[in-house]
Image 1 (cartoon, rainbow, N blue to C red):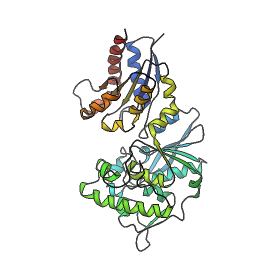
Image 2 (image 1 turned 120 degrees about the vertical axis):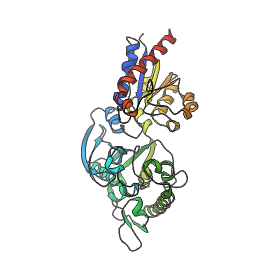
Image 3 (image 1 turned 135 degrees about the horizontal axis):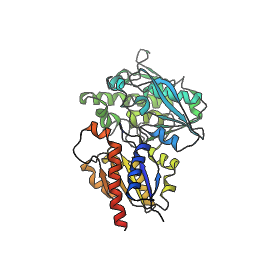
Image 4 (image 1 turned 90 degrees about the vertical axis):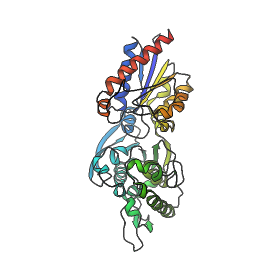
Length: 379
């Protein structure tokens, strides 16, 4: 009976999407042992590639391009999708992502998430009453104020004038008016997909933990954090909810808070993708599984795609290995406890540009070497 290998890689950002990465690994394994059955299950965890993964896992899905706005406020075209079951899908990284040069050239204090709210409105106009939103990879830190503004909330200063739904504008916020909130939201089931459990504000909040990665200067962290805490209290009072301390409220610069304030269910993006793409069924009877991502570190253990793959494989008593673009040595003990071997690219000293350009070639070669070792041990 031919061996069965499940390949479930996430995207290698800036280089290969999840499908391309999984295919490259699969080719390497197949070359090492003729006749191997390769079961590809491309993964995502709410960040870049989530929309592609969900569409691929749902035959009959429809994707379309909408006119919206990026984090800088500039006009932007972005894809959304409607799955075969009628659920809508939005990928935040495609709208206010870190790869948007116009956004990252704008001071993070003036970036906003209005474009994500406009995408929600577009799906509501399409008749969607269930929407899944992947939160990973955002460049914003506005607490989701832009999203809420696009859906009808008004943010006012002490004189009654509207303030911009940005970290800078929220420093003047005194009142939130929810009277014009889109009524269709009350009948819409929203799922917020992410892999972090941070609250909105405080020492573990969006600004303190993730803000510096997005350009928040050290001397601005406390002020922005205080503004978000005040904003959250006013939004909660206006909507009659409590969400600022909920796990995941700090995801995507606080988009997790805004969505949960609207009643969203917070869930592991990787778990949802795994459920839809049939990962568990693919692992039935498998001899080996390979997970992958662009870079592995301590955050991999926060239910990112390879971690979910490892958990599903362990539950099926299938050996599972990790093939990553790079592995943080400080996370070695954590990763070694979850995977039966952790392997990284490149094969030798290389620049980032070379690593991106040759990722496909190096993935295939490293998978080939891993498979030679695996199948040799089996013999």
